[in-house]
Length: 208
Image (cartoon, rainbow, N blue to C red; front, side, top):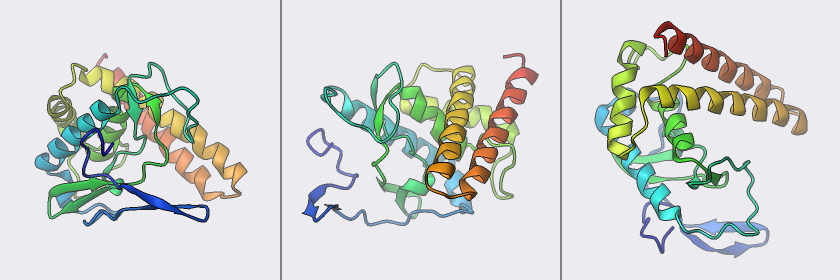
């Protein structure tokens, strides 16, 4: 990424034992419950533009023999971050300064990351924080993401992929709950499933 011109992601410094050392991203990462400024239109635009930069920088990356922690998706247009959302982004005030947690990257379609970002920052969820925009503003905010990213995708496309994305997350969380012995991941899986059902209802109500 550094060679491709991405200067806002951690750079590898070296290996110490079985751990990789990375450069530090100096900024504030918003924690849940997300602060009100996260919902600002300017933040949405910055995040979408940076996601486009990240995707474009990954084109041409050699995939032969690569091993990914996260399942690859098709079409493999770019390398997806797979968790590009406010809780993995650093800011100085409302200015984007960097992204972290690239360990779950894997090949996939651009819309896979775009739709997930939308679920978190629009947000496209069944229940929203009191300080977040309501679902009545969701379409405008999704279209803001698409314009800032430079995508030809539509509101319908984002809803369709977001539903698939949330179901995928629910399945992964259920698997990890058993594999890692962490029952709380089942609660996360149920939350993803509820949000997916909410988006189905939203889509069907609009006849889309």
